[in-house]
Image (cartoon, rainbow, N blue to C red; front, side, top):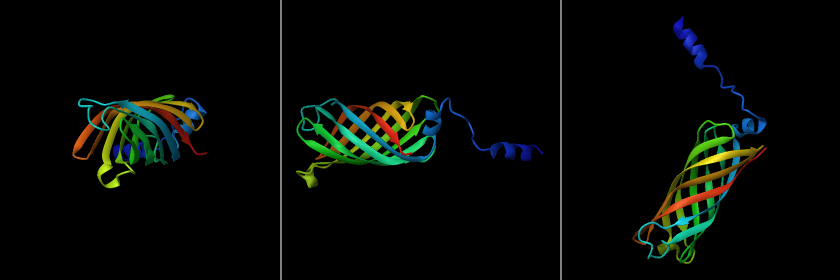
Length: 172
């Protein structure tokens, strides 16, 4: 009897209601676009090319699989102190349960392409970060995150404190 009762409780669907319709819609799976401005100062040895600072804009087109998990493919442009690089990467995000204010972890990684020298000027990068989303309206949220971006290439490695602010849009 105990086993039947336990199984029945576990099998119940998650029908929690949000505090308002905007948040309720935010929990639903579907296409998502995240566009962010990013930038930050270099850490440690900043006398090398590409190492002093960076700033730019990126956009991720992806899918929200569950209330908590999103993933997508991103592209953008990053201006460094000596060149412009074009990131092409994979972005994954895990959001914690929340209503209007939703904390999240993000992980991005891929290539920073230098179209002037693709063979020797392309860098690998990773950018883990933590942040918060504010669900502003139906299908819209504002994001802010901070993390550490590390890129390696040309026999060197550079690290930056990474700050991102942007907007998250969902399709109807």
